[in-house]
Length: 109
Image (cartoon, rainbow, N blue to C red; front, top):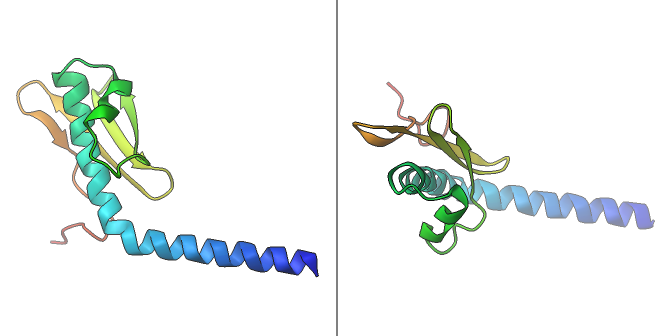
């Protein structure tokens, strides 16, 4: 009986988490895109450490994580398993976000 109760609780919690992610997916996609550009500018234009770039985030962006590929001068912002975007630093153009691909926000031609 206890096992079934735990299983039901896990399924309910999983369903609630899935529903929350689904309802906030577009906002998360925009948030990681913004964070990638902010992190790229902070790191490559401002010359600051990547860990210091979180200070530039807006309230509510705490779940977003930043990572760096120094070889390509790319910063990737992500909410693990949910959304991810990258911005690459170009000395002439500055920080350029990579285009959306296979997301609900992608522009179809």
